[in-house]
Each structure stands twice: as C-alpha cells, then as structure tokens.
Amino acid sequence: MSASSHPHDVRPVRIWDLPTRLFHWLLALAIVGLLITANLGGNWMTWHQRLGYAVLALLLFRLIWGVVGGRWSQFRHFVRGPRRVWDYLRGRGQPDDDIGHSPLGALSVLAILGVLAVQVGTGLISDDEIAFAGPLSRFVAADTAYAATAYHKGWGKLLVLGLTALHIAAIAYYRLRHGRALLPAMLHGDKPLPPHTPASADGWRQRALALVVAAACVAATLAVVNLGNP
Ligand code: HEM
Image 1 (cartoon, rainbow, N blue to C red):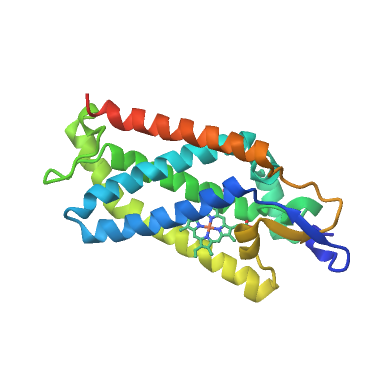
Image 2 (cartoon, rainbow, N blue to C red):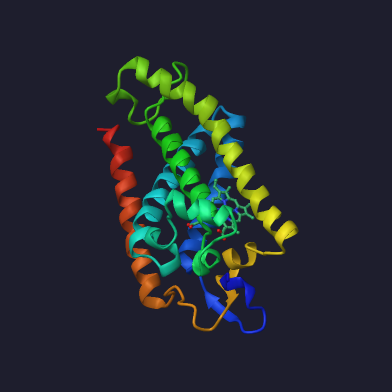
C-alpha cells in the first residue's frame, strides 16, 4: 500500500528541506531568465552568462546536497534502478515510492539535472565567432567550440525546454488525474503522511551546512570561470 493512501492517519512531515526548495525555485527563476536573455541577445548576453554561472553553482550545490542534504533530497533515497521504476509503472510500487520523488519522478529529475549540466558545459566552451565566447572556449579546439555552440543553441535549448514543459505537465497531470498535489510540498516543505514516516532534517544545523556548501559552490564556480581570465 502506498504511503499516501492513509488519508485518516496523517500529519505534516518535512520532505523538502529549505535548501532544496530554495535550490528548486532559484533554478526555475534562472532557467526563465536564461531563456529570456538568450532571446533578447545583444548586451543581455552578459546576464545570460551570469545566470549560466548561477546554474553551475546551483548544480554543484544539488550534487553535494544529494549526499549530505535532508533524507528525501539524498540520491540514495530516490534514485532507483530500472526494476523499481518498472514495478512502479505497473502499480506494484513500494510503500516509500510516493514519499519523496517517485521512481519515475526521480528519472525526470536526473534527466533535467543532466541536460542542464551539459547545457552549462557547452555554454562555458561556446564561441559564436561574432560577439560571444564562453570563458573556457580558449581551452578547446575551434571546431569543438563551434560544435558546442551549435548544440547549446539547438538541441540543448530544445531539450531544456522540452524537459521543463514535461516536468510542469507531469505535476499538473498528477494533480488533475490522480488528485495528488506535489506543488505545496515544494513551497512549504511538508507532505501529509503517516506519523511514523522519517522526515528530512531541516533545522538550523542543516541550514548552516547548506550555507557552507553554497559558499563553496560559488567559490568553485568563480574559480572555473576565472580559469578563462588569467
Ligand atoms: C512553474 C514551474 C515549476 C513548478 C510548478 C515546479 C514544481 C516542482 C515540484 C512540485 C517538484 C517536486 C516533484 C516531486 O514531488 O517529485 C519539482 C522538482 C524539481 N523541479 Fe520543478 N517546477 C517548476 C519549474 C522547474 C524548472 C524551470 C526546472 C528546471 C529546468 C525545475 C526543475 C526541478 C528539479 C531539478 C526538481 C527536483 C528537485 C530536487 O530534488 O532537488 N522545475 N518541481
């Protein structure tokens, strides 16, 4: 039986810690800003570049938070093998499948993070031969930089748009088709679940740790960006 099917014996349980929620909404804002600035072009490309660096720092943060973050943000608690995904799709899920990301949702999370990582990577080494060159473009051969630019502006952009659209559509689908509201937990952190459900730690210690990790990720991002500006 799934954890969300005990409607009478539930209480709010912290699932998404504050750092994960901030990560999510900052990422969503950055993606919107990146799409707008890419379309405006011209001087807006400076902001496109800065927002791209912000996404790099956010992705690094999520990678580390996936190891040291709150229980349900940890990769080991939501990344599942094909067997588990298959069982979930056939309606034979495990009790904890619907607490954090479902096995299927986890796949989409990994796909979004992966596609964004490639998008940031190709942006860093891109060179459009006109006005824009990524900070690491001088470390790669011209052909590689042009191929990266073509991917970044073509398939890469389409994949980011497609996965984001799919992501939002899936959340609407769960709400409308299955009556499962996933959005509130990404806003306030809690899901109504049986009282024995283990919660994600989200106290001041955890948040202080997140600040340290975030500062390290910003420093690492600046170091990467400055590699190209000796
Ligand atoms: C209106 C826009 C959006 C809404 C309503 C929304 C909503 C949500 C919700 C409800 C979840 C939790 C899903 C679950 O319970 O399994 C989630 C997770 C996630 N979303 Fe969004 N999202 C939006 C935009 C975006 C955008 C633009 C991106 C990036 C392209 C994004 C990337 C992610 C990622 C990576 C996660 C996993 C979070 C984590 O585990 O750290 N979302 N989103």
